[in-house]
Length: 472
Image 1 (cartoon, rainbow, N blue to C red):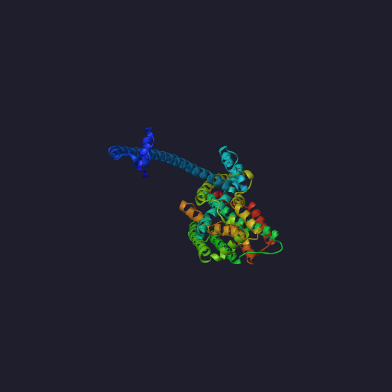
Image 2: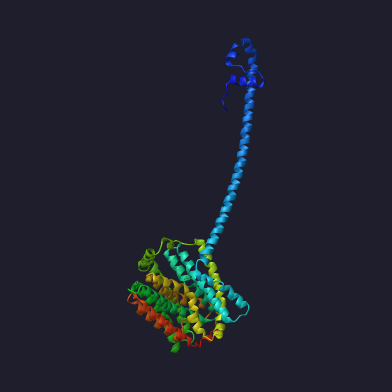
């Protein structure tokens, strides 16, 4: 409270009563007796004025405080509303952004409507040929998106976890189709589709990459890391060994226990191959990362912009979309596998040809496009990693994994791919190994690989698999 002069207050009181205010001089001229008689009354009036002023100030302070409190409450409520709206507005923007990144940024996603079309065609009892075709076209963009989402997840994980993710989801489409066919007892479809993926990657994908890269850079031979190619070639030869011995054991009729030794050998060999592939991951990601990572990453950083090294999705968005896309691939795989035999009858084409040649085109569409793109940018190490790395993954991980899964399901899935298929794989691995031994590539090597794939396709077109009917 402010201190107020007593005589000033007296003047204020006199002015309130309609009397002229007295100055301090006039107050001094008043007789002493007058001061003595009226001093007490004046003091009482001054004290009353103090009390009234204090009450008025308190009422004013309370009024202002109440108004400030109401204003603060209103402002807080408005801020809460703004924050609430900003959260939901940001959430809507994030959802639409992730949808645009996953579904709208790639032209191959124009094939997505064929997925629902396959389900509708199956429900309407349309010919199996159309159901198979629609399922095939619908799965193609989903397979490419699986690779994209796995790449997005690898931004948030270390190299070890990223390698395991690539091992799991790199060929997720083939794995899902194989497990669904295995559950239906279609063992030959599983074997031949996995074999076809290996052949397609090694001959068609790698050959196209060599051809296009050689045409774009026709004044020189493109080079790649020969050491990594030798390691992958060794793993592929080991896979051929694992497939060769059960087939030889079967066709030479030298089994110790007829019908049992072949299956037991396949399961034991599959476990050994899985251990070998796990050791390969440790070798690639832990003990010798420079052999695999430095050249590739350096080329990416030299040739690409900084935006290429930034994730387009958050961790949770990538995980959610990965689950959604995997579920849709599983959904369409059921229609694809169920329609393959009917489509074979409608199109007058053997199931072997459809399993080895047509089915792998779905899972290898993404690898094919990326390998060609990197080869044209003179990043042949990446193209080689896509093509040969995928073949190594299928032969050393997915095939033995399917044998183990069949073991768990009680299905007699083995490594006896029959003599014709095993011989085809053996010759293919030898041809590719010879092509890679120099560490260089040109358009002529690519053309030879593609022509070899044409020979393989023609061979399976005229090949009849007599064991196909035994699995159904």
